[in-house]
Image (cartoon, rainbow, N blue to C red; front, side, top):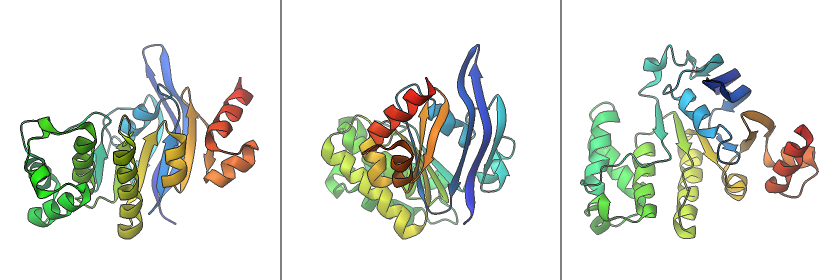
Length: 244
């Protein structure tokens, strides 16, 4: 199976603080791969390095066969990124936001088709999408932001904490969209989360990260077997305690 993302010996420091400490992982074509760990574990930094927004201090990152960040321009049209904080424009409507991102990222002049897919992915009504985003709930904002990320049918979608701070209904909807989109269109998804339950439901494989170190990776079943735990939360606690 094709490796879409390969990370080897990745390190990142800010001043004297080392945020990532020799991270190794592979993300395979068509899978949903989760980076899971507590706040401050290095998840966001890792994702920002993968999409070329942050330069690593050491190590190697290859995305879709191209070295990042040196060859990041070669993959700009093949990947999409959902940051943890909304990148939507509050004074535009939901539709206008989708149209804006479609014009920027769609290829071959198919913006109308892209917007139609985005509207469907959002799960919002025509009336809701016609309202300004500044009137939206956090869940509605996140739905449109995710739709804008996926509607361009990227080869790799990188999602930073896609359900953070959302109500149960919105979080469940977003998890279902991610899972269905990856399954039906074959898009590879690399996502971060601090929610152990979430990644166990959505991801094909996961990497547990603590203080910049990957403590385990594999399927949920493999990690539970390795740790002798009954769920991911217990597995994380056990594996971290073994390091200390």
